[in-house]
Image (cartoon, rainbow, N blue to C red; front, top):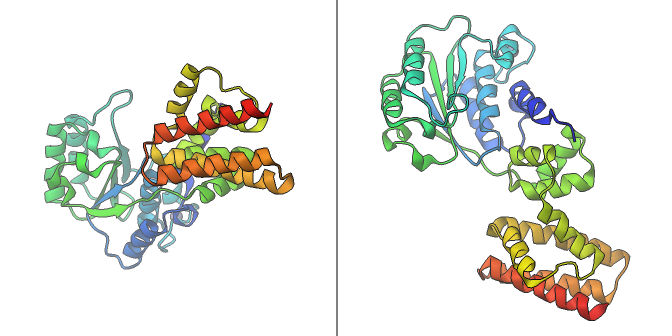
Length: 325
Ligand SMILES: [Zn+2]
């Protein structure tokens, strides 16, 4: 797979305007309306899982606010949109934990404060995007609070975080909250196929792995598919006793059972495959495999410990294959 996918992905996300963002209609509509009605807040807090489009949306918002075409979405053609895209617009800035570091420092916030006090140089609004805002040190966060308390006119601050509770409550309460949701798996699959030209089979497994984050799907696209996913596929496909000894079986089970949601998605994904195979070629063995997986899904849905349920599934499959061959 191409080694520069991540680079092209990050560039691409800066290129997007509102109309190209998928899966975040609620957030996008609120922001578009605020531009249309000329009623933007001084500070926003974008909250949602990693990799669902918070930063992309923040950039699109900055474009919409400053676009010369005077509609509520960026045009991607005017001077302003192009500069924002290239990161050279003097009124739009993105700050985050310093390269290689883990926190946003007080120096970064002080610099920001000096700049917010000037009028916009070229655009209508000065937009400051603070990525991973919860990583600000305590003194940086307190410093930022001062700007949030008395925001200069024409300045819009966008704070981005995965976890709202890691921010000071005084910071939270001064921002308009915008929630970002997980993107449905089928939509991720479609994006991967249409925008990234991923083959349907691969798109399906990447979408499963994504847990609703396009960022994560792209992360895996660039790397190898985790071994356990391929291995589980193999177990079902080859119908052999390739699970191995109990030690590796339990080890394998714990890899699959990292969290309830992903385990359920994986099993549903498998059920889809097994169902299709069964229609093409119904056999007792295939039916048994489907029953075992369905039973496991039921158990997990009834809140049985995921790890135990998957242990049970693998043991039953092992038994099934051993008796069958
Ligand atoms: Zn424009």
